[in-house]
Length: 195
Image 1 (cartoon, rainbow, N blue to C red):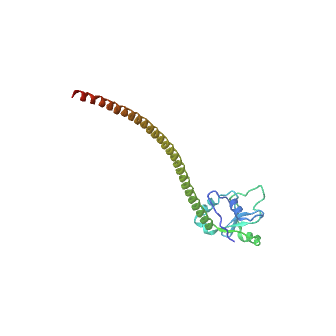
Image 2: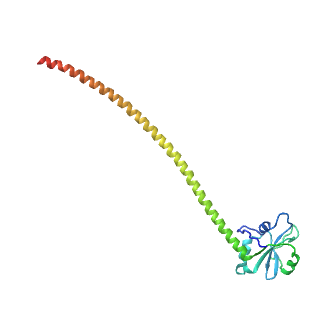
Image 3: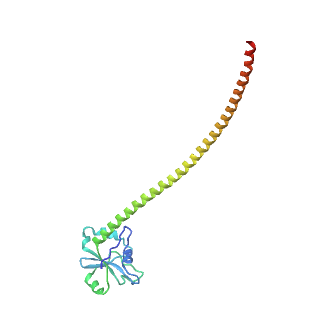
């Protein structure tokens, strides 16, 4: 049974093991098989680094999830451990299902995952920019509405001032018209008297 595993630059061997093993399963480890030889991979090894080390020989390598202890607890084997023949390891695990991943499949998964991560980062960046734009727009709208309210208040005050001046001018005009009327009336009798 093949399982596709997401691989990122930070993916360790233990992450792949945890991803592939089923709940309740005992100890498992990831084994690397190349040219009929098998070796157990250290749990803290970065998988993408390993894939890159194989380079052009990636298609020759397979990875298997083994369901038996890889080493005694508390001691880890070094990366440069000895290879065992795959036939011996496979005969011991015939009854145990395993996950087989070739190096090229893991590389393809890593590439796909990297592209997905980059696309998600770009989408996140676009959303953050949109959010900042909307927040700034909200602030400027609030600022605009405040300044518009202030302008409106000043205009109202000007209108009230102008109306008060207009009332005074009308009152003065009324007084001038009244004075003209009185003066005009005073002048009429004088003309009639002189004639």
